[in-house]
Length: 105
Image: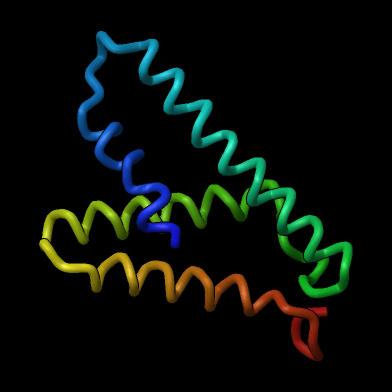
């Protein structure tokens, strides 16, 4: 789901130059929107008791997007999907480690 929805940002980012400040600003707004949406979703998970209060709902989206973008870049460079799949798998495993339970609550 994420790969199809967001890979356009990877290609846009690769095409940016220093002279294209307007495009850079639009890209920043798009990433900010994604971060806000993820932050809100994480906050709802915390509020419903499905995510530990130890999670930084404002900073975790940056980690997730960075991991995803890095996976996209590696996948693009290698011509294979596995780097992106592995990056997302590990990012989701990390987020799941914050589910409430004996060790994380």
